[in-house]
Each structure stands twice: as C-alpha cells, then as structure tokens.
Length: 70
Image (cartoon, rainbow, N blue to C red; front, side, top):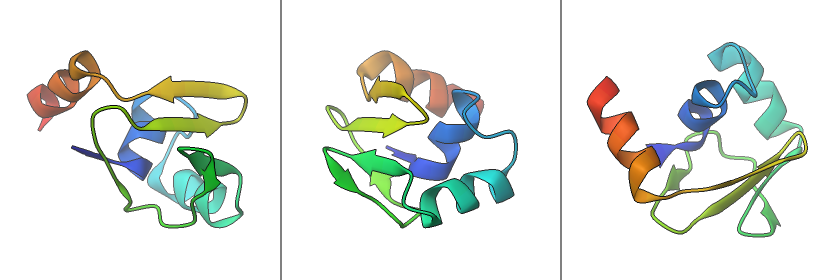
C-alpha cells in the first residue's frame, strides 16, 4: 500500500508534500477513473492513477520499492 501523495512525490509529479496536496485538492488527480481529492488515499495493487498526463498502475514492483524506502 502507498498513499496518493507519496506516489506523486515518488514519481516526480510533485516535488513536495505541499505540491502534492495542492494537485490533489484541486481535482487534477484521478484514481481508477474518478477524481480523487484525498491526498492520503491508500492505493493498492491494480489501482490506476492519472496525474499531469501520466498514467501510473500500482504494481508489485512499485509497492516493493515503496516498502524498501520506509
């Protein structure tokens, strides 16, 4: 599991947590095709995130990379 704001920082879509917050709360991020305004949304295997023209699918490699950074 990874939080939405963590993913945005990890993938370089947002440089800081503050930027991730603004991006999400402004309605510019979608999770599984629906606008998501909760920056703490927990993403799980198979979720798809669309932000700033990038589509990101949550896969095992991404989750493993996140867990190794904690």
